Image 1 (tube, one colour):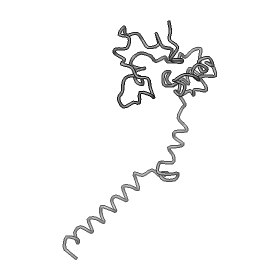
Image 2: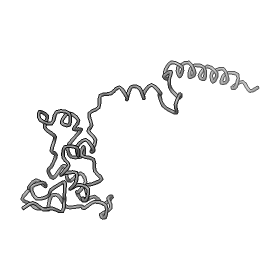
Image 3: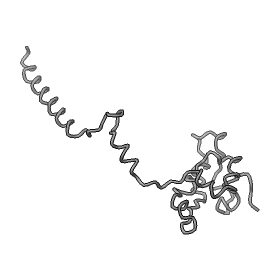
Image 4: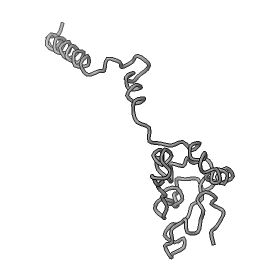
Length: 151
């Protein structure tokens, strides 16, 4: 056996043993029980307080808007995209107001010109040049029925 191996093999064995010992203390007990993740994370996530209202919950009270949205380009979007989590509002509609995001920055997240986005998928506009009077988008467009222009 070459003399280099007499030094390297025990060193390699020590490194492997140290790795196995450290791994034993760092890997959670439930790791790998249900797949390549910590199984107890399912319990942790199930115990978190809900904050998001579903679109179904929104439409229960806002059926008129739900009806408009069915035949609109925004039909596939969840209400949380523009209105935030919404569960507090859903639980206490008289006391908690829903968020109403709007404006060129908010609408521009999806509708600003983006060469990486298919033009056929999302209507894109130049948010700086489009109506230079800097009006808020919802002053002219109804987000629940985008082709229905306001007067």
